[in-house]
Every structure is written in structure tokens, then in C-alpha cells.
Image 1 (cartoon, rainbow, N blue to C red):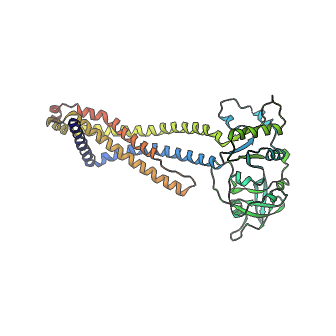
Image 2: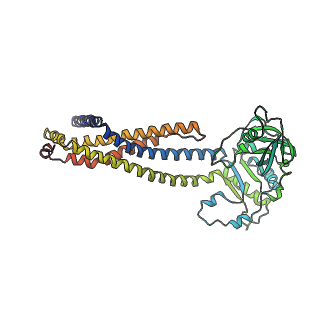
Image 3: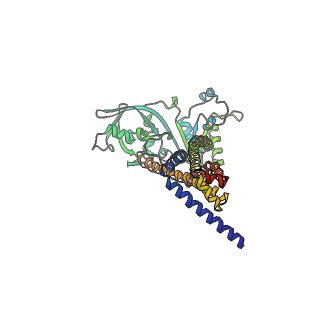
Length: 425
């Protein structure tokens, strides 16, 4: 036990002396230290920045898909996972599949007992006007009652339609913020004012809460208008389009039973025989989990490659500076070894110098990324946070780079003959 304690004391003493020696060396030549720090800072900045961006991107995408509902099923012609299955996509077969119909929506609403909400939306474009202000090709959503709860948008001024209003051909509208800003001059409240949609006079009863632009959001209501489904029949023939049917599972229902019941009812309403394949697809956001994992796995590999080249340049910079440092201190190394310093001490002090340079450069790179993450999160609608794992990754990589880059110069110093080293000036 005493031997272990004694060995530990010697080790920590050697560690402390090596650290002090390395610190004094770095402090003594600030320009050389700056060059070393610059290379490593750029390298670690690249790695940490890439992975921070990847983590932020993945978090925002998964948060978006989660907000769209993990218990929501979208009935469509094509399965979303067809793009990731690796099988050949037969477009002609999907095109030949029948469109969703309002009658199918009513059938599902009556027979799918494991669902708590079912909604339908038919989408078209129309010209919208208020006074002399006109917007062309404005997205128009004709929806049933539960659409606002399944599609996850909020009305922050006015109100949404009642169940009775969505069942009647009533000219009412809930409009997006961008639509309101384009149509109505400052000082005029859109709620309870009338607008013209395709020649029909429509009363605005609500404003949708602004969501902001997102490259991943499949539905942006800032530039859209929502009206009751019967009223949209004035603009489109539902039989010639394919409305979107969305079904939300009851919280207490078993997922497999729910999916099987929904599938059986879709087959029943379309009168498919047992030997016939489904001519529809039941899509869930959870189907995209594997695809997202694969996608971000590939992006992570690309991040390592991009950051790897940057950190490689920084490693060469540290190694070059360490070779110069060893050459300049050859005489001092000879004196140390002549006074009894072991090769392990010389090796350790130079390794510490290389590691110290790399770690300081890495910390600076991490701090720069941290500042940029705060700036981007505050300025733009994109949340960037630095995870503990990402910070540790940056510190670990910088430390390893310093040790690897400084090993050969340190080993060269440790193997010097004290007499020859002392004779060199």
C-alpha cells in the first residue's frame, strides 16, 4: 500500500512539474502558441460546429414530426416508406389508385371506433381580396370540424368554426397572419370583417397564430385560408380531387388493433376482395424514424470527414511547432538529462505542451460555436444547442490530437543523448 501511495505521489509530482514546464514554454513564445492554437481552433470549431448543426437539425425535424402527431394516420395513395424500402417504386400503380372521397370519410367516422378524431381537408387555390388589395393563388383549405386539433395550428385571435358551421355551406374563414398583413392595412382588424374569395363574400372569424417559415413543415398556414368543407365545394369538385383524410388514434386504444381496424374499414368501404391488395396507404410519422436515423447517420459521417480534414491541418500545425520547440530547447534537454531527469519526464513535459496547446485551441473553438449557437437561436427560428456530448467530443478530440501530434517530437526529445544535446547551441 505504501508503495502504491509513493508511486502515486511521484506520478502526480511529475505531472505537476510537466504541466508547469509546458505552461511556461507556451507562455514564453506567444506567437508560436498563437499559430498552434489557430490551427487546432479551426479544426475543433469545424467538428463541433458541424455536429451542433446536425444535432440542431435533427432535433428540429424530430420536434416538427412529433408536433404533427405520433398517433395520427394519414390515408394516402403511396406509402411514405416506399422511398426508403429500396424497392422499385411503381408510379403507374399508385396513380391508378382511387382518390379519397367524402363518403369514405363519413364511413370511417362511423365505423372506426378506436379513433377519437377523424378529419378531412380538400385543398385548392383561389384569389382573395379586401378592398383594392388582392392575393392570387392563395391556398384554400376546406376542412371538417376536427381539422384544427389534428393538424396542430392555433387560432390566437377570434375563434375556430363550430361543429355546426363546418357541416353547412356557410361563408366563414380563418386566415393566416401573412394573408391578414397583405390584405388589411394597418389599424384594421381582420376579425369580423368581410373579404372576397373567388367572388364570394366571406366573413373572417379568426386569425391563425403565426408559425414562421420552416423547410420541413409540410403545411404552413401563415399564407393560407381555412373554410368549412361544404363551402369549398363552390371552388372544386371533391369527386375530381383527393381530399386528405387524417385519423387520430384514441389514447387508450392499442396501436396494432387501431391500425388493423382502420385498414379493414378502408378495404370494406372500397369493396376489396380478400385476394386483392390494398389500394391505399396508411402513413404515420413514426414510419419516418428509421429514415431519419439513416439520414442523420450519413450526415454525421460526412461531418466527421469534413471536420477530420480540418483537424488534420491543425494536428500538422501542432506537430510542426513541437518539432521547432524541441530543436530550440535541445541544449536545455541535455542539461535536464545530465542532472538526472528521466526520459519519461522529458517525454511527458513535451506531450503536456502539445496537449495544452490543443486543449486551449479546442476550448476556444467550442466557445466560438457556443456564441454562434446563441446568436442563431435568438435571431432565427431555428433552435441550436450544444449538448454535453458534443462539448466532451470537442475536448476529447483536441486532447487526442495534441497527444498524437506531439508524440513523435516528444519521443525525439526523450531519446536525446545528454552529452550531444548539451553541446548543441
